[in-house]
Amino acid sequence: MPTIHEKVSLQPYNSLALPAVAEYFCAVRTTVELFAALEFARSKNLSVTPLGGGSNIVLAGDIAGLVLSVELKGLSHKVMGQAVEVTFSAGENWHDQVLHCLKQGWYGLENLSLIPGNMGAAAIQNIGAYGVELADLFVSLTAIDKQSGAMVKFDKAACDFGYRDSLFKNIGRDRYIIVDITLALSTEPKVNIQYPALQTAIDKYADSVAAITPELVSAMVCEIRSAKLPDPNIIPNAGSFFKNPIVPQVQASALSQQYPHMPSYPQVNGDFKVPAGWLIEQCGLKGAVRGPVGVHQQQALVLVNSGGGSGAQLLALADEVRTAVSQRFEIDLEIEPRVYGD
Ligand code: EPU
Image (cartoon, rainbow, N blue to C red):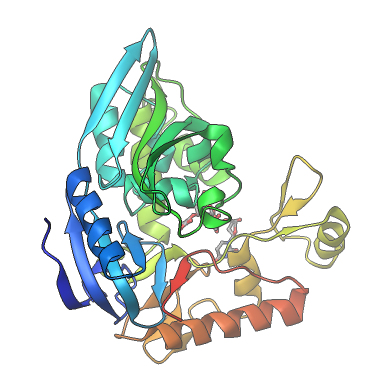
């Protein structure tokens, strides 16, 4: 039986460093421990909240029931010609595994370098960056269904992935605990450098390198991210705090006429994705400071907690940002991380 603690501070377990207390807390390192912890929760009729790396959550208050820190480790792989299927335990750190795969010569994850968090949570919000998203590489995952206690396998279609979205944020919300995820990588070093900022960064090296390798792509992604996005270990944050809104074509073209420099990205259905960071910057809120919390100076999409602020202070700032964007652009911003304890 894993040790179950009472009244545990969750401040070290969330990258925004927000203060909150778990009624019960347990770290599980094996599936046997995980099942034992679930049995404990069942016996006491407690709700169960699984935690991954804590890099995409906002703790608005204390959490009743059992908080489970999912620390399952390990990976296995299968090689089939140039294809490599790798199964990662949910508690493995995402970026450590990106680097591990690069070292093995298993390519495909390089554009997703330096994303904070763990492998399991990556599937919940379908992490994406620099032209690649998890769904592009996804094969399947295994999860425990909290309702039945059974292990369930989900293939890619069953996960219903969308932009920063999946079944686990919708009808599967609060029902499953992800145990492992399987991704399809390749031993063939194909690179994807279509994303404008990545292309610009690579161009600097185009003359001095023999080939644009996945290792170079990974290094460039790390360079761009480090320049723009605050390191959560230094300035607590949860990455993008809002999703980039998707607006109908007619609204996008009206906005482009009014703001010719507004970046926008066409979607397959004719809608346009508009960068929330740009909208927030136009509202004059980039770098805004509200006591202990603020809008990051280099990337307006990121809210930071630099002075020991609370979830309520952070959410008040998020409301201010949403109101400003709505009043100026008639666009509703959606909060990207999951809010708990409100
Ligand atoms: N922009 C501004 N002002 C800002 C921020 C951005 O004008 O303060 C403009 C940029 O100049 C650029 C455009 O907005 O023209 C897009 O900016 P960027 O490339 O920085 O990407 P993003 O759309 O702001 C998204 C993801 C990031 C991901 C990057 C790169 C979401 C919600 N965010 O940000 O993901 O790293 O693209 O692919 O989709 C995360 O999810 O935590 C995250 C960091």
